[in-house]
Length: 378
Image (tube, rainbow, N blue to C red; front, side, top):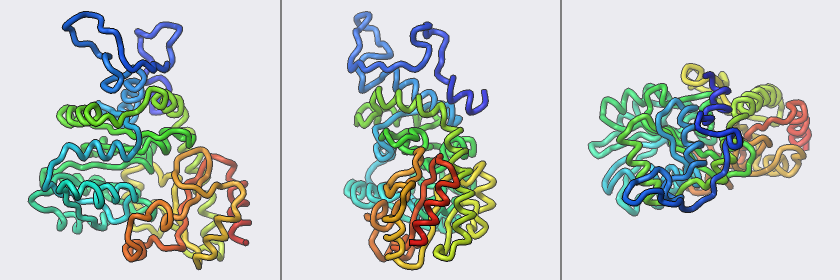
């Protein structure tokens, strides 16, 4: 089946009767034991749940994986995956990375003896130089947040295989509609399912997908033992939302290209950051490993005062964190999503007080252009 067909029919099974042919919510926290001494699939809700199983099956299919796992948030997914490792293990991550990922590595896992090196992942030689004898994995976020830098997934996988390392890819910005890292050879794919998979800004969720049985057992153990899992209701909401995933992603991306064309010619806009923009050095890589640039971009204005006035003047787009929903959200990374980074590091990386990140929704493109135009003029 093609992607959009799988998204709608991927968990419709022959054993479902006519009354519950679709995805139903099973809220049970425990299940009656059918036979003494015989293990059954559903016994306790933290261990397994029919609705969560449907979501996990569907996200695995859409990411071209074998095993999917649902978590209570994107950070719960990342945290649970890192419990596979032990004191003294070292990891290579990108400089331009989500603030929550930086926070958990820098402020939490370092207490347990994890070591992390943050490098410019647009330069494969810097990744190779950062590898140590105790390195266990390379963590990629591509395109990056919020500067939309592109990492060569295949290039990183080649390095990882050479050194017997795992390759982990945060695929939140692209979604499986535009990019499927497992097909390229990555070991683990992670999502903040809050974003495009949920798509309506009404769910907090995370997901992990793998192809390897050994990795699957380790992640399943962490999921059950730690218990940071996806609720049945949120699983059902995600199953509902993912039916329209491809439509939403494609519409938002089309809006993005129109909005970018307007902003590039506006005198108040100094620079734009987008994966397939001609000024992005990763443009060719992005076009090779993904089927589009997505619907998140950033741009800079001339002063922080102008950025503040822009946020205050918006009438359609919302000044809020997050991305991937039907509503266009505009945020200020320096003061909101990346507060964990030291100020000098943010400035050095380009996350300045004049940087604005835009997550484009599925409104009418002309309405969005008009809204940005009047806000920039003010």
